[in-house]
Length: 542
Image 1 (cartoon, rainbow, N blue to C red):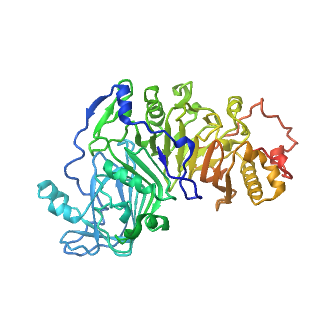
Image 2: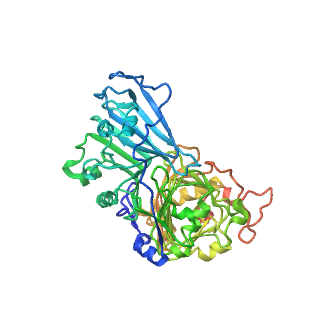
Image 3: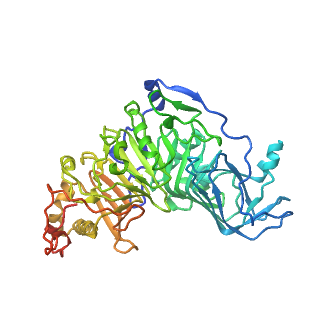
């Protein structure tokens, strides 16, 4: 598993000991598991119908255009659909719909389909050159005209049959998009089906960009946190060819997927972990990625794809399509008594424009990281209802404080090495005092780093026991909230993560009382944790 190259600042990649030696070839897993190979059906329908446009955008003939179309919503369905986008004005007698200068094309998830909306991007020539009658019907759809200098946002879509431009020329630009000059294309929460060779080409390219944050198994998926073809680092990596296409492409939370030529069906592993291609030619779930997990499927998927049979497999990428709960009390008797055991690197990806909630239910120890390769990375996930640690947590704390919910005690592992990474997440803490404590110690650490002898003495434990090498917190625009710009310590890495007491999606639960580590406070007595802070001894150690 590759996760960037190295930490060089808030927007840089991370390479840590937990990322080394984590990739086991899939063929070995298949050999050990004595896999039964099931051949996929046809990749997709030979010809895709045109995507349905709003009723008011029927188009016109002879180069005439309608009023600017600002937004288009593509609903997820059993089959995919095709979009024709061309520079404005397109040389065609076809019906034309002019896009707004800041247009948005977005997909809407459908739980019954179990994946994002599937769209094939096509040029006008591709439709015209296809001589079959079915393709002629496809050509009946209108052309979406894109004006020079405009901006187009593609969001929450699964783009099928994609061939990308060379990353050295225009990274993440689908070649089927014939866009005008000075165009700004933004891809947000987009998944693209590409060839294995192109996936590997992009992985090699991103390794040369120091600021790139990405995760890949080198074979079936590559997830990139953000990348801009206009960024100086990207231009330097691309060399003189950068910008040759005349289009600026911003990729935010974008996944490249190389679908297997065959679906893997293992004996003893449930069908959900070995899905064949659907009617649109999409394999939604394999033993290395899940395109759209929901609250009704996540628990079963985590159990199936972390079974002891698959303990030798590589990393697992899980896209969360909806808010989920990993609170045992929510699941009741269905929850496994040993907890959800993670035996491999697992990467959770939520929506970047609206963080996906993972409710932990004020409970601890329910996600058990077992084995040398087990670790969890989260992108754009709001972790809510975080609780204190308990006695079992204390046995694994290794010097960290069980009195701080920000330590994420729902994840059970010995806090001696980095097994938890957060990017662009939100931590829903039960009280403001826990945010204030982190802000205090971040300030103390910064003062120590500046050479102030008093604070160097007060923060010795942070450097020597907790192995803190970076701790930066800034004020958030949200009331009472702060942002952990960077926290690097021995047991976890946290970047660009918001600390707040306001719920994101899950109802806020009360912080449970544990008599073995807490004391009752008389009604007339103010709890020390919320009293005025006068010195470092009054704060819990972070």
